[in-house]
Image (cartoon, rainbow, N blue to C red; front, side, top):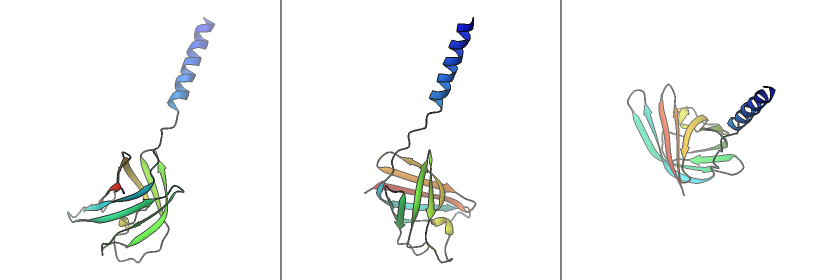
Length: 133
């Protein structure tokens, strides 16, 4: 009787330890080019070219050539499971939609070549579809 309890306890402990293993997080580094688009709540949509560089040391910088967003920025990033958190490290003027800056948490998908970032706010949905250069 005692040995059955010991086996059950060991089995449950092993099952618990295996279920607590960290999910493997892919390394997302490199030079990515593609487009961003914003679908605003008021049915307005904007889109354009976007370039993002994610460095191995956790730094990032990006640039775009559209008039209605800042031309460039830089900061850091960190991958957490199914999300990426960007931290913007630059000062910007206040004449554009600040959600266009890669800052805060984004969900992502990545297949080794195609990186998709998305974020929904009260203003709309921001999507970046980027391919490794």
